[in-house]
Image (tube, rainbow, N blue to C red; front, side, top):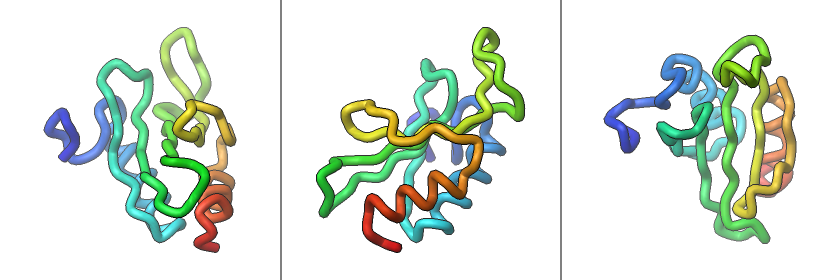
Length: 106
């Protein structure tokens, strides 16, 4: 359960569940739900142990189309603890591959 009593996400629960499962399976890492009600989309989080980064956070798409005026996003955004964007893409596999590279779990 996340901080809002949902098993997954806050904004797009079903899509967030699917994405968490894909990311966790693809990386072998247990990312946890870090969604906030005031964010425009759901996110997952993983604290790193042996890396120059303290944590990684992935903001998840909440739509199949991009429409920022209506807070609809079709991209994944991987960020570090400084809120630096490491990658923004529509392809979850690119996110998974970069996570594997950063964490040296490849």
